[in-house]
Image (cartoon, rainbow over all chains, first blue to last red):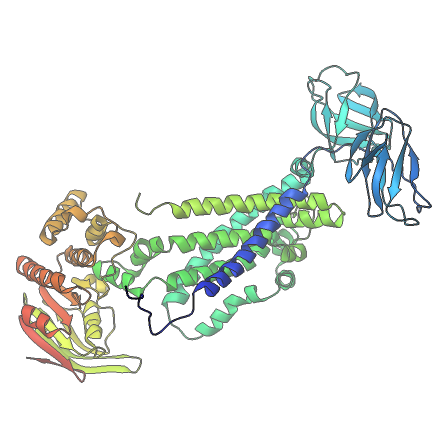
Length: 420
Length: 212
């Protein structure tokens, strides 16, 4: 038996290269996945209790645990901060954050280190103690201040038809809140429970956000249609014709991509100062401004995509079509455009997604007026400004959902074979 | 017939002038020459895909120099065949006839006739990306012949085919030429192919076309 032949010339293994590729690609994919997952996980999808005033006094730990008086039989929500190790209740040590029902008159906060500031929170659940009904307006009185605001939503449980479900709060005082009930609601119940629906439900039920969802969907669709309408001819001209000044036009077409979006908005705003009054009055700070601001940026991307698409279709097809009896127009519609279908779809999804995410130019050129020029990114911004991270996240999830749906639709259309 | 008289054209730094070429009606002309000597340019000029600066192009009895490609009555098979990727074979064959708004029944009859002539009847419902090189060549030929052009321009139609197919396609081209009586201008740089097919033989050198 001879030894297997050894090649004279040997190359290094492919493994390091392939592993390198995998690691680089994988890490990016991982970040994308983790990012979306974090959004989904961060949001608390369950209902939250309605909590009264803080029971923990500000101050520092002295030696040992700090006792807090509680009411036996009542439900409390606690959250430990960075300076506590546990909440001692009925000889049990509770950690993290949770609800518990008090069995004793006292709970104790166990500090991590002496003399540190107290960072824990302990709040009782607010209970409804009185229910009044006049003219289909139910006024609920709570034993603790509920901290809810007009325009927020609450969920009612265990009260019968018409009562149970999510209601918009129509009026509040510290200890009272009112909700409107439908005509054929059940009689006034003896007791009922309240809870706060999760931020996603709050967002979806809010009329402001409903409006901004609608405006976003409609404006993005109009923007996409307009972008395609413009991008197809420009892409075709730039791909098929040679003329003087073409490099200049090429540069002009890139301006909206290169300029900071905010500057695009400002430029539009300034441009419309020169427009006749009737025109600027009906555009600036109105919904057409939203569409125009989206269009200016989104269309540039659609033009790029269409140009590349047409560039990739050889002239040969048109030439053959011309000899077979087409004029240029027929060759375009019958031979070129059907081949550009994939690119067309890509341009449409790209401009739709760009338009959905557009924020800066809209803020400058259309403003951020609720129920008028508020689109989803504006909603997210307004929620953030009001300090409601959860609300912002809810709006973000709605945007992620919308984007995913549109991409899925585009993919399905794109996958459909040309030859059925 | 094809008659080029004193053609001159310019394309960037490439220039041709005083080109003459005549192929009688129904003749099979083969044009040979080195790569890049302007054979394809001449072909494109005949098809109307490249504008000429001066000279006359007669196809049949008509002076077509000013005509758009559609009105010249030529069939064009480019080197890469350029089958339309979005159409099945049947649609490719029918394309020229649909443009001429012929009735459905006539189109169907012509498509079947072409398919039979070229031996592609079983391929009519295929997409072009499912065709082999030889099959694609047949379809491209059929598409170019559908509207019964008087002139057929073939740009290196057999260049990418293997030896066996080569002979088969040569026979097919002879057969098609005999059946249709079309005037053919066939570009190649294979001398054997030229010898095999040519009724008349042209050579392109230094920007001039000479008959051999």
